[in-house]
Length: 537
Image (cartoon, rainbow, N blue to C red; front, side):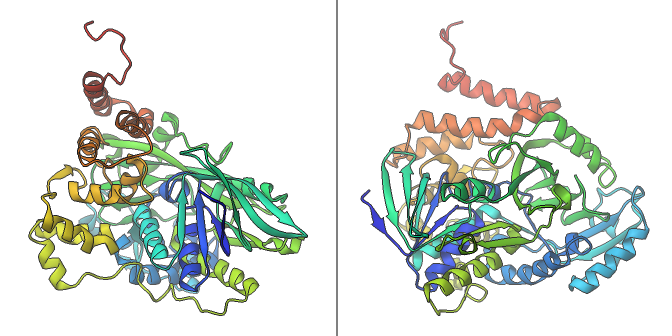
């Protein structure tokens, strides 16, 4: 790749970064996004999937709560493809302080969070798994959101407006001259190629890595990676978001997400931005914390444990961990003597669009771009018309048509056309009901280089089998279709499985242990992935 010139370089391919790329591109600014891994590589793929109503922050962070109220409504409207309107419950257990309820209700009223009391009997009817010892319940407009899908739909929309994305590209340097940004040095992690991108502005949206990016420009910012560990259960035992009604703490949120339930989280200072390896002790502690809400939780099968790092901005004398604000902060480095660069820290997935709008407002003001923000009104992807849905119904059962339309978004018409000219409706991933045609279409996208990228887009390998069966089917089908990747098929498959197994290792007990061993044995026998020297033994 030759050296290039753009107006703005956005660093970081999570929700905030792609949101900024989309907003900039919609306003007519030529922008490129750089991400060291695949899209949603970091924090945006490592969270519980809660679209906040604001209730969780009503007492501790009123500003964050009000932002959640507004952005929750916006995302339901523009990103219906990514949101499931589950609603939420805040539940007081027999171990919680009843006096806190009044404080919480007052906070919700001030922040504009809608609450509705629900009788204990009704709550137990709605959620039979809840403890019969619960004392009070309130309904709130929480929802679940697919962070992977959200990032992908934003990226597709951004590209439609002229934005460019370079995944698996690391920023190796930020060049300055006469007190302002002149460009960034970049290395292609897949080819080793190094090149320079000249630009007028750099947006640092690198999440937990934002501090490292700032240092490349000679700046110092205090970003604390705050690690949260979660566990995923293999069935949807809660139909609604269930929050424990007490001061925000560890292990007090259950989120139904597709066919599974995600539970967490924790808050501990991470050693580094990439410190995301959960432990068995953390998983077991979470189970103990979840029992007051769901007493049978220890009998449920756990699919995996995972962890992500919150990029918390911690100015001097500010609290860290749970005490740190969940609001976001934009730092214009012009105040430090460097023009043409700003960094964004903190925030939540729920408020990613607002964060992108505020950052883009700043960049456009510096560049003299007068175009207004339209991201609160324009949908991330078009709604398919009835005719297209009927055409799709020839290839998918009725209950799957909407699922596939939501998953594919803007590329849904292309998928239907592919199916009309080729048989490709057979399922390669039965857990998440993903067809061969979907996997092939996503695999040919310019941002897809590994099976991991297909997983983020389609959820292949994220269901009950955790890739034990679908990954081999997928790599075989893609090889037969002459789809090329950054690595050879066997290496690609091994990398995919190792990442899946990484999340299985902290929960290796009971039935999980047996099923994990079955998956390992399958791949040891078929591809010798355990590296045995003598297969005759």
